Image 1 (cartoon, rainbow, N blue to C red):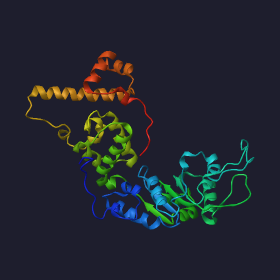
Image 2: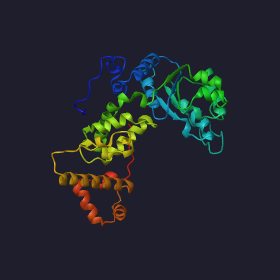
Image 3: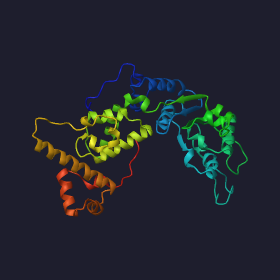
Length: 354
C-alpha cells in the first residue's frame, strides 16, 4: 500500500459522516470497531455543554480527542486552552488556573489572568487531572459545582462560562478508593466518561497512521519517502506499543530521518521491533544471484546500517563518529558519499508534533 494507492475507506467509516468538519476527517478515519464506537460517543457529547472525562493510557490521543470535541461544539469559535496539570508545580497550579491580583504575594506586581479567564466562553482541557493536590481538588470542585472561581488574592467571585474536559491516565475510581482523589470531584468530572482504546487494541489503524505520518514528514522535512516495506508494517502492527500513538510517531520519525531511499525499510527501525517475526523474512534473498553478489550486497547492507547507527549515536558529529569507527574523517566522508548518507540528517533537531 503506497501513499498514492492506499485502501479505500469502508462505507461505515466516520469519515463518510457529514457531522465531521473537513479538518477532522484524517482523525476520524478508522478501521477499528472500538474507535468507531468512541467517535459515535464524541458525536453525541460534542454539541452539549456536558463535562467530559477522557480515560486511557499515556499517548493514546486524549488531547486530540479533546480538541475534536471542542471543534464540534457550539464553542468552536472560542478559545481551547490546554493545561498539562502534571507539568505544573503544586505551588503554581492555583495561580496558573485562576490567576492572581496585584499584591497577592511577593512578586505579584500586576494582575495576571489565569487559564479559566483565557478559556471564557470556550473550553479548558485539564490533562492529567489525577496529579492535582487535594487542595486544588476542592477549588476545582467549586468551579464545577457553582460555576465560579476567585483569583489568588481576590475577593470577588468570577463567573466561569467554561466547558471542562478532563483527562487521566490513572484509574480515578481506584484513586478514590485509596483516598487519593475526592469522590465528589470524580462524580462531577465523570458525567460523560470516554474510554480511548490503546493502539494495540486498534492495530488495524496502524498502516493508515504510517502513511499519514509519511505525508506529514514529507511536507516538513524535505524528503520524498513514498512507501514502507511490508515486513515493517507487519512488525509495527504486532508490537505492543506501551507508549501508544506517541511512541509510534517517535519510531516512524527516527526511521524517516535514517532512511536514505524512497521506501522505509526494516534496517531503519530498531531491530527489537522484529523480534517476534521470522528472521528469514527481514531480508529478501534473490536466489538468481551468485553467492559472491549476495555476499557483496549483504556487506553493503551491514555497512550502511552501521554508518547510520553510528551517526545517530554521535548526532552527526563526524570527528567523534570516525574515532569510534577507527577510521579517518576522510574515509568516513567517502563511505557516507558512497551510501548517499548526509550527516546533517543526524544532527539534533527540534521537531513539531503531528
